[in-house]
Image (tube, rainbow, N blue to C red; front, side, top):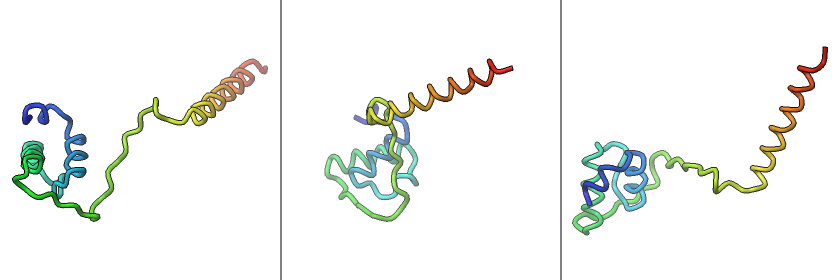
Length: 91
């Protein structure tokens, strides 16, 4: 389990730590954070949940964006392309 966690990026470990109740996950080194995660998972340490601290960032996956938003972006890009072509062809 430790080797698998150590292969994860630090930001992902911090998210996991926040979710399961690691106290101050951003102040720990990667190895310390992994150790705390394992201790909580095994029940050797009680989770601590706090509303203090900066909220975690949400990683945005383009595949999960609303189709309407993607359609609007496509229309904006099409209009911009047309405007550029018009500007370049006018002499």
